[in-house]
Length: 328
Length: 264
View 1: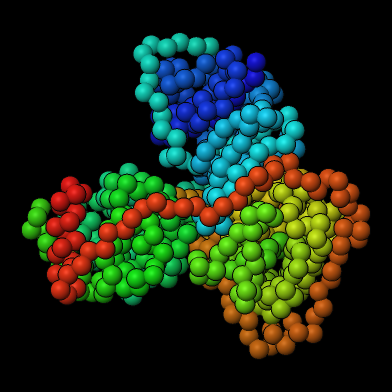
View 2: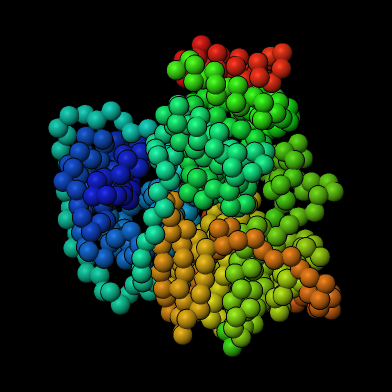
């Protein structure tokens, strides 16, 4: 029997959806019937809904409550996650590629001296070696790599969010609850949090919007985003941008879609003047429908788009906007 | 004086046209494109800029360190022309396929040989493998405080204050020195080398070390995560191009098409 340990997350006093995604990912790595999925929740507050985790496939839930386990205290999470690791001695450890996970997972791996697979979008067990095999985008999404762990005791995997769907929960499932009391000395926290400055983008948050309208360098100027805002408003969606737009200061970085920005999965993603560099596509390729308006017929965005318009957005967009308004 | 180390990486130019991107399936490597020289990873240039901004306002010495194979000296000397003081290149075919664990071990060996540093800066991730693992591993191995995705770095008294980019804004954290900080593009564009900088850089000769100089056991450099396949993803999407008599009509036709598909 082997343990598969995954580190769930708590945000706004609720279990964040990534936790359920990680359970689905862990399910793909169950090789023997008696392999056990252990979900660890490390937080300053433990939501009562942790019992739901059993309905999603958790067999053991490990709760670690400590006031120092707030998001900004990465050092506290490293110490606590190491103790959870020692308790369950898992063969496989899963983290999510979130603000927290991308800091904690690598440092835990290096502490243990074991390899870590970053940003995985598919997982499985190699039938010959019984080791974890992962698929992940590299070169900003221009290439896809498949890697397999060599003969190592522990395999740490960081999973890309919004790739694995949570399963439909079964009703009233029960499992084992382990409450772990971990002493955390404030002196061990080497980086001290001072304050957080939240810059909420206006309107619907990008990550949860069903429609996203995004502009690129091709729009030429910050003020031209007014048209996109208008369109987003009519469609009940949010505005996004390419990295070039944010680097130029036309919009804040909170609007950036892409590898180092936000990952979005809307039903409809309308891009205007975005060439579709792989770094951008890494953040939006899971959109259900992509519409591209671009003057360059060879732009990469048309390789990923369902509908394309080749031409000058200056003329196309106002007419499109007007027609959308009428149809609504 | 503040002793700053910036770790940088030479990568294939991520801005090259997608048509120039190809993979050698037998070696499982991305081919070096003809006529397109490599570049310093963008986030690493941001890290160099972060170091220079500290040097602009305080007494600092900046050492640049890189590991790789087949360095293009002119490319790697750019930080010197921007204003950095020294360049150390650890070069050899044995460094071609290093995994993050091995990279950290080689960096640590080099740092031990170089002496001690007050601040280590790295790019948040490299545009080839997008791993974002080496800086975190290095901080762990050196037992340095680690602050990731910094967009503003200030040296105060004996410590530093860093603004970290978050998905919904930023947070401010402080730590003592020595420390390691990874730098993101939100910090701002790296400066252009000026003529004086270029002249100064042309007179500087990089220090080049190999695995013997660092007393490295090559056996330990074998990747523990084995690459078994590398391919270009196939998009099976068929893009329907919307036509029209002129751009206005095309715009209206797009709206009608999206309504027909029940998307709006």
